[in-house]
Length: 263
Image 1 (cartoon, rainbow, N blue to C red):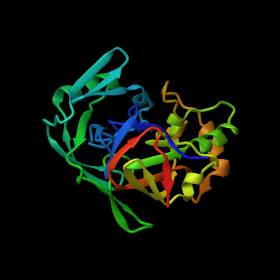
Image 2 (image 1 turned 30 degrees about the vertical axis):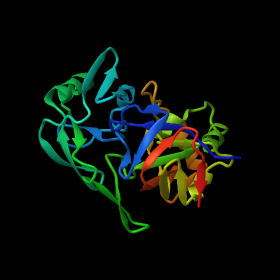
Image 3 (image 1 turned 45 degrees about the vertical axis):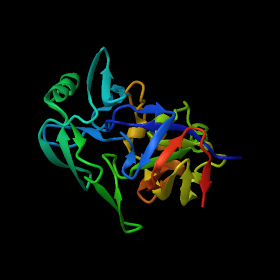
Image 4 (image 1 turned 90 degrees about the horizontal axis):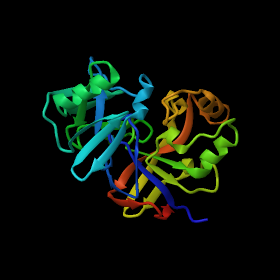
């Protein structure tokens, strides 16, 4: 069976909903516009669904030169290049990240929706953050994703998981960037160099999963079954793994339907 790309997803604002797209521009730090923005709390600590599951219900939309975010009956829009506020040096886990507040207006909108004082920031540049891979001893450029610029998952891996669950879960539980057709569950763990469309990627490591996979991305409600079941057959050391983290070795366009070439 020929493996092909079945879905491409970008997540403009860290931990908000994703956008399915037919084509994406692969860059070293992640797909263009992927996790270039994030929310900070009162202490300039990044916010995720782990603490505020309702973040899953904020729906982003990119239109030419602007980013809109919709929540319930409210919305906010700002220019993709807009950074008018204070420069904030913060961290994403152990990595330093140089960011800048988008605007006071946008920050106030998120504060009103979530009921606490929040800033929305954008990464200052594509070189503002890197993540050190301890296995390969290299620094990997990455935007504001947790650790790596790309996450790839195989459809058969999800089919295998769903065969063990009482209620099926969709792939968006795992928030991948690239979903591919596969015939063997978790075969993507073993891939090394991956060519897709114009772009090239290298497999860095299997992706360790956290409580975010328990959150229904359409409701914001949690159910622990997914993580509990994965723990019975996908344990690696102290981690439960699903999908594979990648870095970009050749920049270029990736399109749904592109054939996967392995080497």
